[in-house]
Structure formats: C-alpha cells, structure tokens
Amino acid sequence: MSRFLVAPAQGVAGVVTVPGDKSISHRALMFGAIASGTTRVTGFLEGEDCLATLKAVEALGVQVRRPGSGEVIVEGVGLGGFTAPRDALDMGNAGTAMRLFMGLLSSQPFDSVLVGDESLMRRPMERVAKPLREMGAHIETSEGRPPVRISGGSRLHGIHYSMPVASAQVKSAILLAGLRAEGETTVVEPDVTRDHTERMLQTFGCEVSARAGTVTLRPPARLVAADVAVPGDFSSAAFFIVAACIGAREPFTIRGVGVNPTRTGLLEMLALMGADLRLINHRTCGAEPVADIEVRPAPLKGIRVPERLVPLAIDEFPAFFVAAACADGETVVTGAEELRVKESDRIAVMAQGLTALGIRNEVLPDGLRIEGGRFSAGTVDSRGDHRVAMSFAVASLRADGPIEILDTANVATSFPGFAGLARSAGLGIEERA
Ligand code: S3P
Image (cartoon, rainbow, N blue to C red; front, side):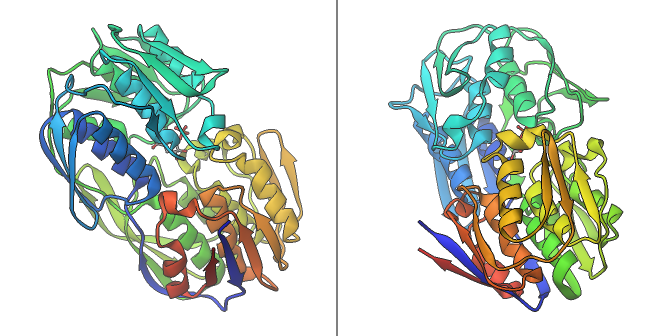
C-alpha cells in the first residue's frame, strides 16, 4: 500500500501551477461527447477520476484522441448518439462521474450499469435517482448505493425540483437529463453550489437561466461543440494556499487558478482567520474566471465558520482543518454534514488524523471543533481519501517530527504529481510503494 513520509519542513517558497480543474474536465468530456462537432479540450486533468470519464465516453461509442499533454479531442455524437456499452461502466473513485452519467444515461434507449471502487460503492446515489425517477427514468440502486442500474427506453419529462441538499452533482445530473426531456427543467438549490454545468451549457449553445438559486433549462435541438480551456483546480491550489498560510517564508504564488466564486469559500474563511491573500492578474478562461493567488505569511486566529460558506468550500475542509489546527484559539465548523458522504467520512477521518498528531478536537454531528496547537510526529490513515492525504502532508510545515500518511494511491485521482510539486515548493515529502 503506498504512503507518504513527510519530514518537518522549514517553509514553502516560490511559484507553483496546479493541474486542471477536475469538475470542469469531467464536464468538458461529457459535453463534448453529446455535442455536434469536434470539441478540443486543453488543460485537461489527467487524473484517474477524469480518465474514468474518458473511458466511459469511449465505451459509449465516442471517439476521443489525446494528441498531447492536457489535450483531448472529442468527436461529439450528438444528443442521441451514444451506443450501448458492452460492460458495466467503471467510474473508479469519481462520484461526479457516476452522478452526472446517471443524468446522461437515464434517457438512452439502452440499459446501463454504473459501478466504482470500494469508496464509491458506499456513496449515496438515491439523491440523484429520486429526481430522475420523477422525470420518468427507470433506475435501481442497491439500498441507495451503487451498482446503479438504468433501464433504457424511458421518455423523460422536465420537472421543477427543489433539492433537499445543496449539491452541484445532483443539480448537474438533473440538468443533463433535462437536455433530452420534454418541456423545461428547473432546479432550485437551498444554497449556492458550483455552477460549472450552467456556464458550460451556455458555452455549448444551450439556453439556461440562472438567478437567485433557480436554474431553468429549455431542451435544445442540439449542443454545439466548443473549445474548452480548463483552468487550474482551486481545490488542488487549496493545499498550497494553506501551506503558504502556515509556512510561507515570503510571498508565495499559485498561478492560473480557477476562481469561480462558487468555489472560493476557502479564501473567505482564511481571510476571516487573518490570512493575507491576494488575487492578481484576473483573466478569463472561456466561461470561467481565473487569477493568480498570492499568499503572504500572517498569523491565523480561530473562527466560527459561517455556514453559508460551507457549500462554497465543500472540498477544501480537509485542508482548512489543518489551517485551523495551526490557528491561535478554537475553530468551529457546523452545517457540514455533507462531509460525511465524500470519498471518506471527512469529519471522522480528519478528526482521527488530527488526534493522532496531537491536535485536540471534538467531533460534532455536522462538523468539527478544533483547538489550535502544534502537530506532533505520528502516523495518519487517509483511508484512501486523496484530499485527506494531501492535507496531512501540508501539516508537516508545523510538525515537531515526521508524519507518515497511509493509503495515498488515490492522490492520483485528482492531483497527479502532487508529491513532486510539493517537494519543489519546500515540503520534505517522499512517496513509498
Ligand atoms: C462536484 C460537486 C461537489 C464536490 C465534488 C465535485 C462537481 O459534490 O464535492 O468533488 O463536480 O459537481 P456535491 O455536489 O455532491 O456536493
């Protein structure tokens, strides 16, 4: 089983560029596949999650070429052009792939089965299956979990759906199903969630109106292929943002990061703690805003995290908990029960890791209370959760001895090359098989 060994480091310095955005890479492949014409994607994340989506679109009869690093050419087959896959579609560790494909496949004339790795096979799928059934789809889950079995030949109709949980994956699955449904589809979100699907639909020529938490889509005759330039993943940048907040010796820069406001809650949370963060060189990458993020050293103080920021930072809590452990005083996160159904139960797994490294904390049903301190040497089990593994590597910047992190192979799902890049920034990280 692969692991990280991380020696305490003096600090981080320099400039880094992180790999492409995972959410946007998945969507670029899916939208390219169902568009009419050729879609060229650049900056594509060549992580295992997005490669699972790539294999799935190929299994559905779509031609995909990869002429160079980060470049993908998708020959779109049109909205009704998928062909039946021979086998079950394996989504690996990727919840986004499974849930968005449920939306895409529920209106196809053929049956399909979706499976994944051990972690994905435990994750809830009824949150997507239920609204899709309301649209007329025939979907079975196994006590709410994968395998997901979709029967072909359903004719879908649009719905007006108020989501009980704030989830971009649920919203996106419904909108993708709505592309081939009869009539309009409207999704109402209880809190704002990432809006990459809405932005990309517009790029591909589909009319969507989005305002005040309500998104409405009118089924288009077709989607028109478009080029997609994928920005750096804010969620990958998060590890370096926190690393710089707790360990920068001088201004530290992360270049070319997607700063869509539905993703950057972490910046607000860290600013409330006293972090010195600046966004510079604002530009756009297709439909998405991009900037360089500059971090200067500053002391952090504990905060109570405003619950409205939770969905805007949903993937960044493992990294944020490490920042909280380095702050002066207590930090409290509530309203974050969704963390329990991510790649691992991130409340429980992070709490165990913090405790193993001498940081006092209290598990709450929907969050965590953390007392700032210093990390001791120790061993942490990431339970195969990529973001947990990378977060504890960053903790080495404030540790009294080496940190060993177990079960780290899944870092490659979202951040291939993490250890090398972290080493170049100053972390004492080594990978062991
Ligand atoms: C994602 C949405 C989020 C996030 C996940 C990616 C997406 O999940 O945690 O990593 O690409 O739509 P939820 O929508 O379930 O919160």
